[in-house]
Image 1 (cartoon, rainbow, N blue to C red):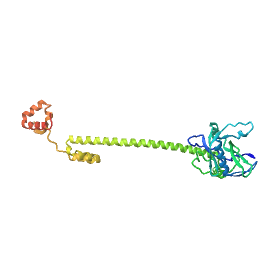
Image 2: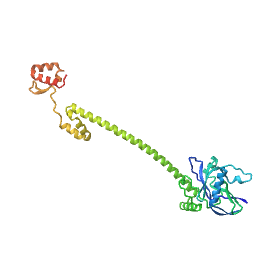
Image 3: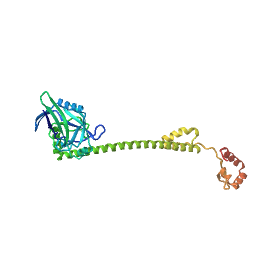
Image 4: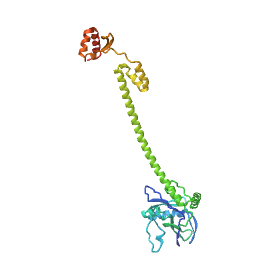
Length: 332
């Protein structure tokens, strides 16, 4: 004789996380092995029963209905779907189902209108040799029954933890934590979600800072290259000017550039104390009417015809020497 037993899962809180890239698909635990007292009598679920449920699901090739408050079982009730079970997995003593929730079903869960699951098993147990267990449907409900079914851990907080705990164990841990913190389970859940959201934001900020740091390092490298190039140009100009002013010889240029870059003060001291002796550039000390010697510069004389005529008359030989020096050293 076939017997339909309504089995609801106590305190299986529905906290969602996406799977396989689809945010509307989650994994739930809809059954475990064990023995219970039900209003219709004692019943049990074995690992063989879970395997039969899975085999029947695969044979029927029909998605499992997830409805609201077992409405699909009520006379005159509607069977609006909250979601559809797409895949079953028997994992040890657990029956796991991957569920694709409808937008409305997902919205109700996210709004905490429904927090628990309640599976409906059809048990055909005519004899001990003839036993068949199938899954009729699973409801979203707020009035669960079983204690032993594991808590759904595929939430944003637990999604990387694949170890299931019995509800009683988790419930005691949460209750103890609530007692210590003087808060409700909802407060803990909301706080945890807030922490995870804040952590996600911090990760994003950290990535943004890493990108900014990379850009700053690139800018620093560019500035260092620009400064090095400018320093090279400054050193080149300084040494060239010293050579032009006869403070350095041309054959000293390479060495002077190296000294300038390594120690500017030492370079300046060397140039100051080791200037090249300049050749006469058309200059000479000549006596004046006051019998005092005066430096005469040929380049100035040629711009003053009256004074030039006077010096040619008074100092013809001396003037010829400074004229020769002037043109010998590039005068025009």
